[in-house]
Image (cartoon, rainbow, N blue to C red; front, side, top):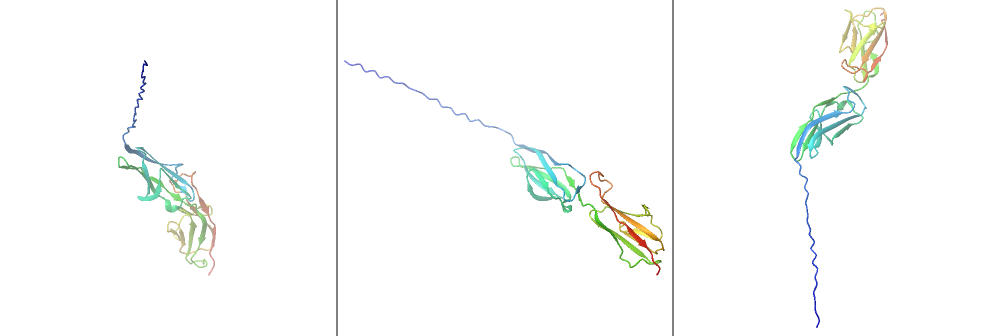
Length: 216
């Protein structure tokens, strides 16, 4: 007689799946702020300027850039103005947008003023040869951002007299009647506005003009 015994082994595999979710609440943008690296009141033509925009936003904000209210094609948190030109002067701002909260916020305005140093100064006369007793006119011109024009005689600032007038923002010096004297006239052109940081941007050009009235 045979005895049959069945043995069985049951293995139970317990599987569990835990789904971790990262909950966050979208917010912002807030505290949108525009910063200019190495800020100056004036920038020289041809220099490079970097502007940076930041904001407190979750998820990260989308950035847009504006100058004088017109939107630029540039996007991203940084705006680089390379070899900047005078035409790029203006009021810059950045705008941030959160695509979850659907909120916009605009930064403060930052002024970028671009100047060109004075060069090529010259003194010319549309009049004929200076003749004693006749009227005579001198014109002082130059390339660049000319803010002031001053005229000197004998090393001193020129003081207009009854016979002498300065017009067109001191660009023109006119004599109603020349006298028979030799005069060294020195116009001084300056690209330094009174409010500008003297150490950051300064340009001054002098040009000499010998004026001698001849007998008719």
